[in-house]
Length: 126
Image 1 (tube, helix red, strand yellow):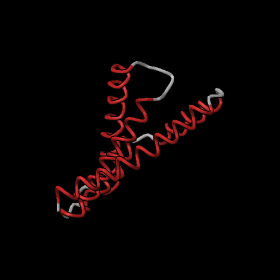
Image 2 (cartoon, rainbow, N blue to C red):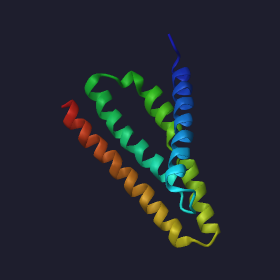
Image 3 (cartoon, rainbow, N blue to C red):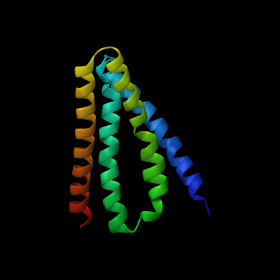
Protein backbone atom coordinates (compact mmCIF):
# COMPACT_ATOMS: atom_id res chain seq x y z
CA UNK A 1 0.00 0.00 0.00
CA UNK A 2 1.24 3.47 -0.86
CA UNK A 3 1.80 5.67 2.16
CA UNK A 4 -0.09 8.92 2.62
CA UNK A 5 3.15 10.89 2.44
CA UNK A 6 3.93 9.28 -0.92
CA UNK A 7 0.48 10.23 -2.22
CA UNK A 8 0.95 13.85 -1.08
CA UNK A 9 4.40 13.96 -2.69
CA UNK A 10 3.14 12.47 -5.94
CA UNK A 11 0.20 14.87 -6.08
CA UNK A 12 2.45 17.80 -5.19
CA UNK A 13 4.90 16.97 -7.99
CA UNK A 14 2.08 16.72 -10.51
CA UNK A 15 0.42 19.91 -9.23
CA UNK A 16 3.66 21.89 -9.33
CA UNK A 17 4.39 20.73 -12.88
CA UNK A 18 0.86 21.67 -13.95
CA UNK A 19 1.22 25.08 -12.31
CA UNK A 20 4.46 25.67 -14.20
CA UNK A 21 2.91 24.63 -17.52
CA UNK A 22 -0.24 26.67 -16.90
CA UNK A 23 1.90 29.70 -16.09
CA UNK A 24 3.85 29.30 -19.32
CA UNK A 25 0.65 28.95 -21.32
CA UNK A 26 -0.96 31.99 -19.74
CA UNK A 27 2.12 34.14 -20.29
CA UNK A 28 2.22 33.02 -23.93
CA UNK A 29 -1.46 33.91 -24.34
CA UNK A 30 -1.46 37.27 -22.53
CA UNK A 31 2.19 38.29 -22.41
CA UNK A 32 4.36 38.92 -19.38
CA UNK A 33 2.88 42.15 -18.09
CA UNK A 34 3.51 43.70 -14.72
CA UNK A 35 0.26 42.35 -13.25
CA UNK A 36 0.61 38.65 -12.21
CA UNK A 37 -2.19 37.25 -14.39
CA UNK A 38 -0.76 33.71 -14.47
CA UNK A 39 -0.69 33.35 -10.70
CA UNK A 40 -4.16 34.75 -10.15
CA UNK A 41 -5.53 32.47 -12.89
CA UNK A 42 -3.95 29.38 -11.33
CA UNK A 43 -5.30 30.33 -7.89
CA UNK A 44 -8.85 30.76 -9.21
CA UNK A 45 -8.76 27.48 -11.16
CA UNK A 46 -7.27 25.63 -8.19
CA UNK A 47 -9.93 27.01 -5.86
CA UNK A 48 -12.69 25.98 -8.27
CA UNK A 49 -11.27 22.45 -8.52
CA UNK A 50 -10.97 22.26 -4.73
CA UNK A 51 -14.68 23.04 -4.44
CA UNK A 52 -15.58 20.39 -7.02
CA UNK A 53 -13.40 17.77 -5.35
CA UNK A 54 -14.75 18.42 -1.84
CA UNK A 55 -18.28 17.67 -3.03
CA UNK A 56 -17.27 14.75 -5.25
CA UNK A 57 -15.27 13.17 -2.42
CA UNK A 58 -18.12 13.53 0.05
CA UNK A 59 -20.80 12.28 -2.35
CA UNK A 60 -18.79 9.44 -3.88
CA UNK A 61 -16.84 8.26 -0.82
CA UNK A 62 -13.51 9.45 -2.19
CA UNK A 63 -12.21 11.03 1.01
CA UNK A 64 -9.27 8.63 0.94
CA UNK A 65 -8.00 10.56 -2.12
CA UNK A 66 -7.87 13.87 -0.24
CA UNK A 67 -4.13 13.65 0.56
CA UNK A 68 -3.36 13.03 -3.11
CA UNK A 69 -5.77 15.55 -4.61
CA UNK A 70 -6.31 18.32 -2.05
CA UNK A 71 -3.01 18.43 -0.19
CA UNK A 72 -0.75 17.23 -2.98
CA UNK A 73 -2.15 18.06 -6.42
CA UNK A 74 -4.10 21.22 -5.62
CA UNK A 75 -1.64 22.31 -2.93
CA UNK A 76 1.16 22.05 -5.48
CA UNK A 77 -0.94 23.72 -8.16
CA UNK A 78 -2.15 26.79 -6.29
CA UNK A 79 0.38 29.44 -5.53
CA UNK A 80 -0.47 31.45 -2.46
CA UNK A 81 3.18 31.70 -1.47
CA UNK A 82 3.82 33.25 -4.87
CA UNK A 83 0.69 35.36 -4.34
CA UNK A 84 2.19 36.76 -1.15
CA UNK A 85 5.51 37.47 -2.82
CA UNK A 86 3.87 39.25 -5.77
CA UNK A 87 1.80 41.36 -3.36
CA UNK A 88 4.88 42.47 -1.42
CA UNK A 89 6.77 43.20 -4.64
CA UNK A 90 3.92 45.43 -5.85
CA UNK A 91 3.91 47.26 -2.51
CA UNK A 92 7.69 47.66 -2.50
CA UNK A 93 7.52 49.10 -6.03
CA UNK A 94 5.09 51.68 -4.69
CA UNK A 95 2.12 50.17 -6.55
CA UNK A 96 -0.09 50.00 -3.46
CA UNK A 97 -3.27 50.37 -5.54
CA UNK A 98 -2.21 47.48 -7.79
CA UNK A 99 -1.34 45.42 -4.72
CA UNK A 100 -4.76 46.06 -3.18
CA UNK A 101 -6.48 45.19 -6.46
CA UNK A 102 -4.41 42.03 -6.74
CA UNK A 103 -5.29 40.93 -3.19
CA UNK A 104 -8.99 41.70 -3.63
CA UNK A 105 -9.22 39.93 -6.99
CA UNK A 106 -7.17 36.93 -5.88
CA UNK A 107 -9.13 36.33 -2.70
CA UNK A 108 -12.54 37.33 -4.03
CA UNK A 109 -12.31 35.37 -7.28
CA UNK A 110 -10.75 32.32 -5.59
CA UNK A 111 -13.43 32.17 -2.89
CA UNK A 112 -16.10 32.75 -5.53
CA UNK A 113 -14.64 30.00 -7.74
CA UNK A 114 -14.61 27.56 -4.84
CA UNK A 115 -18.26 28.38 -4.04
CA UNK A 116 -19.15 27.94 -7.72
CA UNK A 117 -17.33 24.61 -7.81
CA UNK A 118 -19.23 23.45 -4.72
CA UNK A 119 -22.56 24.55 -6.18
CA UNK A 120 -21.96 22.96 -9.60
CA UNK A 121 -20.62 19.73 -8.15
CA UNK A 122 -23.54 19.47 -5.74
CA UNK A 123 -25.85 19.73 -8.73
CA UNK A 124 -23.97 17.00 -10.58
CA UNK A 125 -23.42 14.61 -7.67
CA UNK A 126 -26.73 15.15 -5.86
